[in-house]
Length: 76
Figure 1 (cartoon, rainbow, N blue to C red):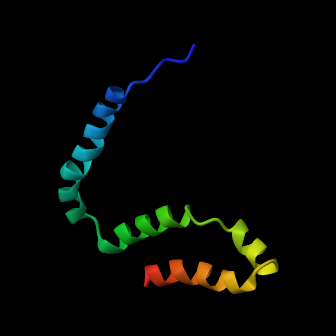
Figure 2: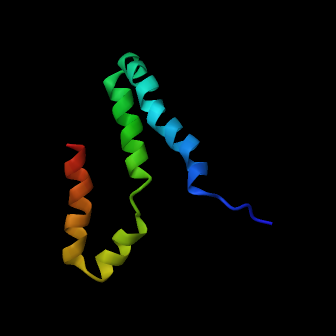
């Protein structure tokens, strides 16, 4: 039987999310910039759908160029 979740049940999780950056920001000082950049790039790379490129290549070639160009420009 599923348990009912009220909006107040999300308050502890929200508080934890808000407190985490405050506690962890000072630790980023000890991480090399290149390592931090690699972690961020890998997190963003997992959000990119590679299957859409094949579909856009065959269907709409004009849309493929901005789709690939945007993430590449963000990394620069």
